[in-house]
Image (cartoon, rainbow, N blue to C red; front, side, top):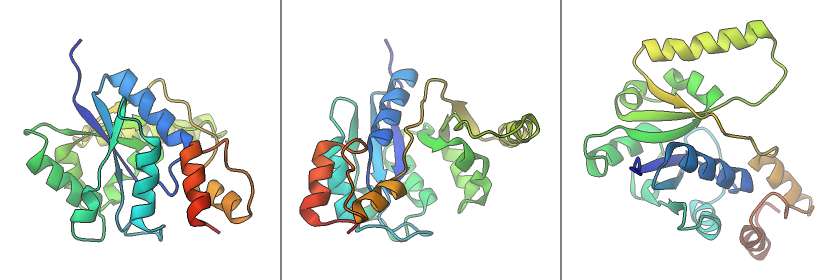
Length: 204
C-alpha cells in the first residue's frame, strides 16, 4: 500500500504526555503516513516554557521509532519559533515541492489567520485537523464553527479532518500542576518521562 510520507506534529510538549502519543499514532494510521515527526518549539513566541532540551529529551524517551521521530529543527533556526519560519525551511529542504502535512487542533485551525504570516502556511501546509472535543456547545455555536472552517476552505486552505481521533482527558498544564504538588502523574505520561521529570526535579 502506498504511504503518504511524513506528517509533522508541532507543539511545546511541556511535558509530552500519552495523549500526544495516542493522537500521533491515530493520525499515522488513519492517513497512512510513514512517520509522525514531533517538532518541539525552541522558543515559543507567546508562552513561557521549560528549557527546550528537557522537552526534546522527554520526547526522545517516549516516541518510538516504529511510528515517529523527534526533530530539533527549531533549535537550529532563529528564535522566536514561529511556525511559518520552520515550514519555510522544511518546504525548501525536505518537501520536494509538496505541501507539508501538519497536525493541528480544530479550534487552533479556525484561528489560523491570526498566526504569523498565514499566507505562507496556506501555501505550504496540508492541515490534518483533529476533531473537536465534546464540550456542550449548542447547535447554533456548532453551526457557526462549521461555517468558519468551511470559510477557510473557500479561502484556499488545504485540510483534512481526522475522523478517528479520541482526545486524552488531560493537558500538559494539568500534569505540570500535579508534578508541582508532588502528586502522581504516572497514568498520564510514559514511565520513562515520569522518571526523567523526577530525576531532574522538573515542574517543582
